[in-house]
Length: 104
Image (cartoon, rainbow, N blue to C red; front, side, top):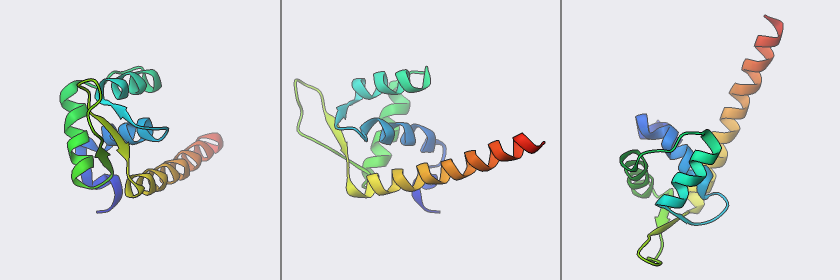
């Protein structure tokens, strides 16, 4: 298994966290707000911080020094590459699915 699929049931929250961090470092609450704006669903703290922990363990994100009692995170180069790969894979799947729906 490679890429985000190795995170199992946390692969969707992980993907959303990586997308959130793609434009710069954020702390957990800011990620929750950003993900809610993107998906209309706010991830709970358990889901969010469980996925953050797994992303850190795999080297996709890293924590930065605390700011005002909040711990920001940022993408690593490995995380940016994994996000790019996953988004390209999703684009291929979506394009194929939409094309097949159009001929059905």
